[in-house]
Length: 363
Image (cartoon, rainbow, N blue to C red):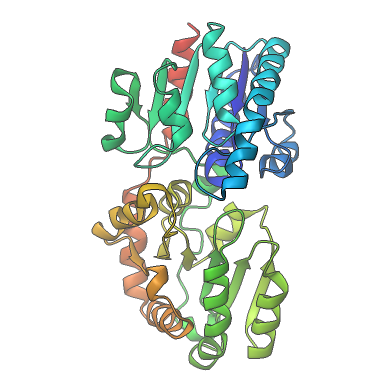
C-alpha cells in the first residue's frame, strides 16, 4: 500500500501527518509512506529524521504576507503542479493525504484529477485557504471540531487531531508528586510553535528577573526559534534561572511530558498535544492567525477549565511573570487544569484517520 502525505511548512500541519504515517506503518507491513513538501518548511528537517522519504515541491503562499510574497507564490504555482505530477507519477500512490500548507494543494489536486483517492486533514476550527479550495475535489476530510464539518459537507468525519505516540506515552509523566514544589522546582516549557514566537520570547526576557525573585527554583525549557535564542539565553543567565534554551526541540514529546506548566501559542496541533499530555497551560493566541482561529481554539480549552488565555496585546513581562508565578504556587489548580485538559484529548485520532484511508482504497 503506497501513501503520499502532502503538506507541512509548520509543525502544526506536519506533525499530524507524522502521527498518521506512524499509525499506518505500525498497522500495515506492506505500507510505503512518503512525504511531499518544500525545502524551506519544517518537513525538510523532520521527515528525514523519521527515516521517511521526502519529495520536494516548489510552492508558496497566495494569501497574507506581502504583495511580493503573494506574487512569488503565484509564480510558483505552475511549477508546483509540474512537481506534483512528477511525484504522483513516480510514487503511484493508492491514497494521498493532504495535511495543509502550501505544498498540500498541488499534490492533492493532481492526485484527484488522476483519480487517486484523496483525503484532507483539517486541524483548525476554520479551514485554511488551501483546504477550502480543495474541499470540492477530495473524497474525504478529517476534521478536529464538529463545527468544521460544514465546510466539507458529506465528505467530513470528526476524527480529532492526531498526535504522535510519544505524547500519549508521556501523558501526565511530570508526576506532580513532590510535596515541596519550591524545593523540587516547577518545570515550565515555553514554545511558540515550530518557528518560535518573538512576542513570547520578549515577554519571557522581560519576566526573567521577576520569575527568579519569585520562584528561584523554577526550571525552564524554552524553544525560541533561530532568531531569539541568544537573547533569551543571555536573559535567563543574567537572572540566574535554571534554563535549557534551544532554537528547536526535536524531543518535544519528552519535554512536554516532563513539564508542569506550558506557555505557548494556541494552534490546533499544539492544543491536541497539550490535551493528550494533560498539561496546565497559559495560551497566547497568535493575533494574526486566519479568522482568529487560535483565539477560538484557546477559548474551547478555557471553557472546560483546561487553560488560561493571555492575549498578546495584553502580555507584558510583568503580567506573564505574575500568571506563571500564581500557577506555579497553586498545585491543586494545576491538577484540575491537567484533568480537564486530558478529558478533551482524542488519543484515537490517528487510528480513525487510518481506518478511513483504508476504506478509501478498499483494503
